[in-house]
Length: 492
Ligand code: FAD
Image (cartoon, rainbow, N blue to C red; front, side, top):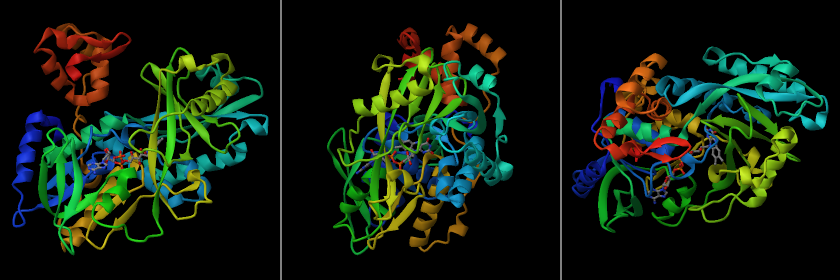
């Protein structure tokens, strides 16, 4: 399917209500092929994969799409340079290949980006010995092979300072530049969901799974419309639980959890956002955390800079993880150590947010969460419920392929008979966008500022036109929602 040529009948309150009617009409004799629970990147990827392989699919999400972990990440599309330390070469290679796949599938929302690691004379100021960092970068390039972006290289002290003028120059010897990707995580989720819908998936938000029915194999789930409270029996031949850190709560709705030694281990990571004029960086930087063997990413983001992340075990309320003042200070201290003239304080923090990694633990609580593998895991319970968790944004396509293969096998269908389109899929918004010159003209004819137009194209890719159409309906839709942000009412 050519996503470029489709100006889709979009998802709306109307489609939601039509899909709910379809769900009410499922019966034991007329079930859906697949019910996917959870509208984060994992569920979105599964819905797209299943629908594009011809399965009748529904995706349900209890809140907004992407409102769980999938909008609270560092927003990188990466192989995971750090995992090399754990000799997880296969995982890194997999991430690097998927990085390239996402650049092809969604070039409007995932871009290659330079990352810089400073090198200091004093050992204590470096993340690791420069020779080891260099060895890691060589290996990273080798593992990417022909899917690499550009090989890493070293830059001089002066070049490093030109790219980050507030960087501490004392003892600075230069820096390494390597390449990974940057994305907008919540837009990636939405565009994946929109594409799934175009392949025929039914998509319903504000609907949550309350329980399951069917024995010994599950035949479906009871879902609740979160707006009306209505309970609907949805009959489905297979069910995949993609509820991330809520994975075990969802499994428990089918009955007591089976004894298993591989459990979910939520780990919290916080980020904060500061204005770009307070922290002047041209590329992304990797800054060592103080007293910990980890680094913070400092990533330019529109007119701001995002910094994170921490990595700590989490046992609180999963619905509302928050950033503690002590965690924010911890990040600010590290940034001020390496960018002393920035002198950031709490007053510079525009926003701070926390996300929970759905890590799968080996059962050994002695291992720090930083060292827990980022590989995804598929659990198949004896009642037929499939749960897919772990992994990362970057590998969502491959995870989805594996998840749908598992569902097909459970339905006694050979995955080969319904082959995956793999990296040939193109996400909504991935079509051509206007050049800079064309944008000048378009800004004139539509009467919106170039900054707003740039933002619309950045956020929606080739589907920016859908926002322009809405814009023409009412004058007030042109209104900018915040004084210093190019976000307009038409987007809402
Ligand atoms: P979620 O996004 O949490 O989605 C699960 C959904 O299920 C939620 O929306 C929830 O509302 C819904 N749900 C729960 N219960 C029910 C129910 N009963 N009925 C219906 N719906 C339900 N990965 C990268 O590739 N790059 C990065 O830079 C990166 N940085 C990260 C930084 C941090 C701090 C964290 C925490 C993670 C990061 N990751 C990164 C990993 C990545 O963000 C996650 O692996 C991914 O977002 C998990 O997505 P998910 O869909 O499995 O879970």
